[in-house]
Length: 487
Image 1 (cartoon, rainbow, N blue to C red):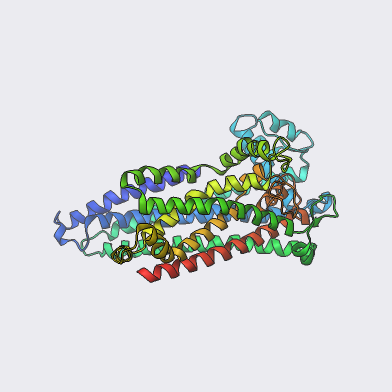
Image 2: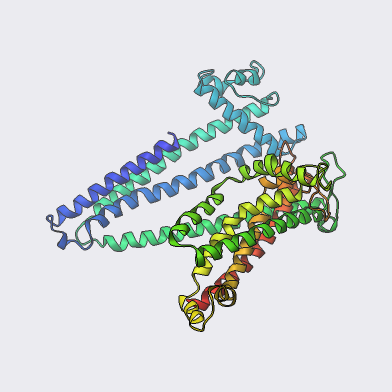
């Protein structure tokens, strides 16, 4: 049974359980709400919760664990094939998954039958050609070991799907009957439901934390693997970035860090003054009517996809700067892709970020401080310069640091606007690149994940993660300290 249908069945059973649980509690009390321990809705919610929550949790866990269990079983049988073909086991397993998915697609489109897919042999059938008839393209011919592994993969997956459907439906029906039996007037349904909701909230928080831990561990393990095959000293202190998948690569991070910080600095030089001045105007000078129009208009910039900003840099800002500073102007710029191009567009992207945060922080300054300044005879501009901005400064600094971490992690604007040259130069009209752009390029294509040229992407990601984490922690510390002054 498809997962979507299984979810719909569980939710429908939960809805029916809600109605029946509520009715059963009321009928047990003779229709008098006052004889119930809890409101009738709590009895219905108790049934719905005990139907849906265990079943959906089990379904989610099964969807995660089943592929891992199937792949672990298949991998054990493919060790000899990987050794014979001299390919990493991960690539062989990728071929198995493609063939298995291709067989499923061919069955769905009526090209072959289920029995034919289960009994197909490479000695009698060109698997690649048959799957091509179903619109499935394979990069290479399928040998017997891969085909047999794909058939076992499909078989184990089919058994797992049947077991998953049976187990989830059994949990849902069991929860339905158990909770419906509990729906008596004396049952403390409210306590049970509120406890269940609290545990759901705790689970959601734990999922967020565990996801973060999983991301960190995936970076850490692959970074350690990279440093086993490439010296850490050359990675952190070399000024040359020259990857070569044929060997002899030089993978120094310093040029990438320089480009990252240089572009981010130009972006902040654009975003901070404009965003801060806009925030001061909106919070201190603008009327309610103007603020109601201007603030949403500025924040529209935050909803524009970064790929659109990248196209704007490539097609508009780059040619404009080239006409002014290029051969037709001052002669400083040789191409439209440069640090200045990406920095200016990234600064425009960050304006609503700085403006909105600074506006909220300035509005959080107590009105009594403004009134005290006016009472002493200060003008509005003097009050802003000498009272409001100094009081809001810690929060504004935190907003700037958060904007800096956002700029450091940007990718698409850099890819389209800054170029791909890894160099250390002070000229803002030269093409450069960043850490994020090189992470994309190193993982694009058919990369061998056992090679340093591919593993370096994880080391770059780990370095960037540490930098942005430090900025975020520092920014949150400043903002928290600021909030404690006025709460």
